[in-house]
Image 1 (cartoon, rainbow, N blue to C red):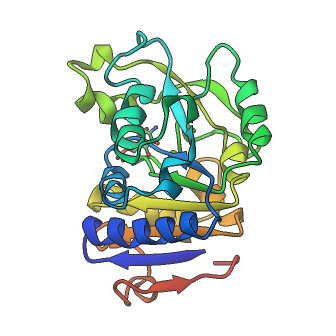
Image 2 (image 1 turned 90 degrees about the horizontal axis):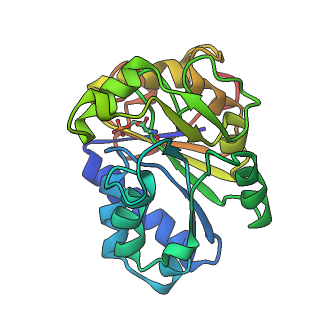
Length: 250
Ligand code: GLP
């Protein structure tokens, strides 16, 4: 587990984008798992500055999708990913895959059929969810339809006209699905994520903190700003901009 604390989200995103562009140029990035929400937006903006054939040839797998929004709804994750990632990077919509709530299990098979995910981009919810795996989600869970916690609907209501418009369910990659990616890069910015970041990195491995499942993965990079790092032990947040390596045992 690598933790890199940056002075700002922009610097974090710029550094992470350069790493991904280099990985794509070197032939090591063909299938990218993409998250939605505000956190990865700076990364997507930075990647768009590098618009290259290596990025345009990517296949994208979304982390999750709301259930019940009409096709083409601007806040459906298909719309969000096409708008914020596909179009800026020149990736054809036919290479953008989202889970289907009618056949969620087919998604894990589709990911496997593409050789698995090379890099999975993650954000983290204030309650520690990854994707829409809410507290209590099993660490062996696969892609499935799941209810959204009230706190998650409230946090995501900012993208809708009212809380009533926020779906009550979503289809999400399961925790085991996420962990099957070869590499995971988790972004977190702002003081509101500090508790979840500290619990996920330094706290116990527990299903009540879904992001703590990442402690089991062999190649996880946390890319965070100083506010999101503010509750981590000082040793983990002392070298701004430089990665701190953590062993499997914390
Ligand atoms: C939603 C998404 C998650 C995302 C989370 C945090 O629940 N399903 O993938 O990490 O929101 O969003 P934000 O980055 O806007 O705080």
